[in-house]
Structures are given as C-alpha cells and as structure tokens.
Image 1: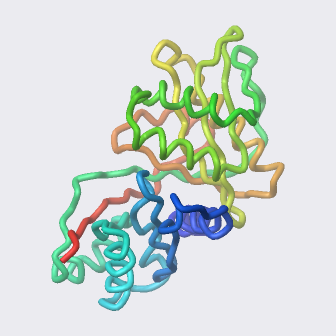
Image 2: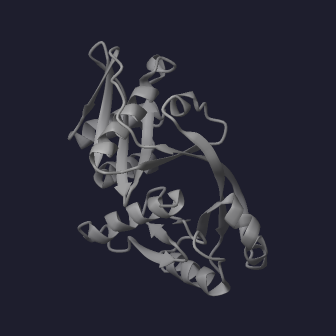
Image 3: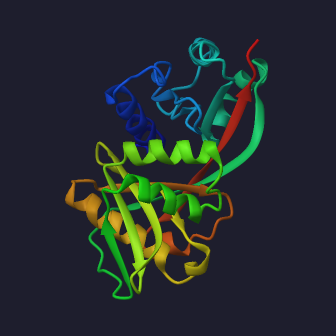
Length: 251
C-alpha cells in the first residue's frame, strides 16, 4: 500500500472506531482521492493525508476538504507527496493555498525480524500515561499542551507501544500502527542523554519485528527534513520522497 494512503487509512480507522464524547464530537475523517482529511481537536492531526495518491485532485475534492475543516473552525490543510504537489500545483495556486514551509522526508523499507541489541532492552508497554510522559520528554516539549494531546491520541491509536531502556533506565519510546500490509512507525523519541547510542535503531528494529508477527510486509516512517537517518538505514530503509504542507484560511 502507498505509504501516504496507509498512514491516512490507519488514522481514519482509529477515528471511525473510537468512542465519541462531548469533547470529541467534531473529530472525524472524510475520504478524498485515495486519502483522508483528518481532524482531532487540539492536536496536530488536522490535515488531509494521502489525497491525490490515486488520481489527480479536482476542485470538488478541495471543496470537500475545505468544507470539512470550515465546519470545525479550522483552516484547510493538505500534506502532499511532492510528486502530487508538482502535478496538481496549479489547482492549489488557483484556490489560494500557501506553502507552510514544512518538509518531511519519507522513508520506506521491508518488514523483517531483527536481532535484539543486547545493550538495549526494548519492551512492549501498556502504560499509556507513562509512554506519553517519556515521549514528551524526548521531544523536549513536556509542557506543550498541543504536543501532549497529540501524544495521548497517538498512544490511544497505536497497535503497540514500545519503551527502550539502557541499564534499566528508560531512554526512549515509540509507537507502531498497521494498515493493511503496511506498518506505520511514528512518535519515536529518545531522551537527550541517550541519543547517538543506538536507542532509536533499537526502537525501529523492535517495531519491525512486531510488525512482521502481525503480517505486515512493508513499513513507512516520516521525519523532519534533514533529520539523521542512520538508524533507519541500518534497518533497511531508504528515502523514497518528501511531503510538503499547504494551508488555506477559511473564507
């Protein structure tokens, strides 16, 4: 499955199946041209992913996305593969979209069982609150409310949460989701004191092993452009493209 479509389908499935209460009544997902427009209030999940991955985008696709976000008092936002943006750039220009300046590198690789690093113990965790706290510290944003809400949602959506420890001290954590045959690796974070010691690579390897046990055959992960990729490359990943984010304010 195309990586962007897999990511969008993973989040849409979570939103369609989660319990709804007064605080989440406006959350949701709407299908658009191979992807989904996604919205979870107060989090970073407020943009369309995978749109245009199956066919060129049209004005009516944009109208669906724009109406979806306008109903939620939010700007219309797309995260697009650069190939899709290059193909459909004139449409977005005509509709007044602006580039947010965010560039994300996309890495894809095979799912396989990996040997454990004897120096680093990586375990599954059901402690969502503890996982959120650890990842927030790894992202250097432990007091950021939007980050914390995003991580809480990420933890709730994951099929598996993992925590890495060095000499018995928790050093990093990450999440795994699966859509079809594709594993989505996300929310990987390592505490500053343990960076560049193989913790990130161990978190990747563990998630690939767990994904293999669940029948996945391919994996995708996105990172901020320019982020060191050695941990991914050591686990068989290669950069396959980039994504950019566009924004249109409500009118």
